[in-house]
Amino acid sequence: MVIKTKKILAPLDGSKNSIRGLDMAIHIARQSQGTVVALAVKTVPGIYAIHPLGFLDFNSMTEIKKLLSDAKVRAAKKGIDLTGKAIAGDPGYDIARFANNPKNKIDMVVIGARGRSSAKEIFLGSVSNYVLHKSKKPVLVVK
Amino acid sequence: MTASFKKILVPIDGSIYSEKSLERACDFADAFGSSLILIYVVEKSIPINLLDRKEYLEILRKFGTNVLEKANKKLSKKGITVKVLLKEGNIVNEIEKIAKKEKCDLILVGSKGLGAVTRLLLGSVSNKISQTSPCSVLIVK
Image (cartoon, rainbow over all chains, first blue to last red; front, top):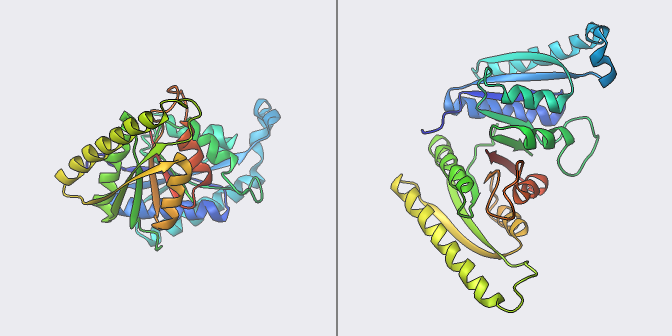
């Protein structure tokens, strides 16, 4: 194989579509003996980004931690190593930044076509679209 | 999960990006044992070239078969057999039609192509495919 997909980024938001994306990421990781990095982003309204107390919202952080542990169990069942990451901020921007960061060594981004932000969009969700445009790594959109 | 990529559709247009996506398709074919379908779409919906339209289309067709042949050779060197298609019409529509008809599991496109000006971001065709395709899409950057 010429190109190795060792590290796969799978952004999660708890929706069905993101779980499907995670499944696909696990599936690909199994084939190429890679690892999956699950990234859960807690949306923080822009105004809190300046305010330090905005990040101290531990209540909803537990929700995200539960999401990540669920993902870990899901990956462990298939025998894949999964590392969870929780970030607070704007989902699209932070996912793209995380993927582009050379420190993280992401080889591929696997993302569900829609999340939960816009209830029933027929086409692509806004976050997926943003990541698609901004990421410098290959993006797999799972439908 | 049952979604192993059995059939992968690779639209190519002869640009560097489509070559990259071809390489990636090779990897996938190796890893998942999937069959590839190469497609070149002759753009028919160009409003200019009213006078020498026929000639223009002829040139495009020739270019298309050239590109497909080259890709086919490249792949057969690696021992991958492919199905090759040459279609005419609107690029995005044709690609979607084929994807539905052949029941593809994945469309593998380069992020940009030959069309229009090379943009900083995503190409128009790749964008439209990712928006409206019935199956999963992998955008190779």
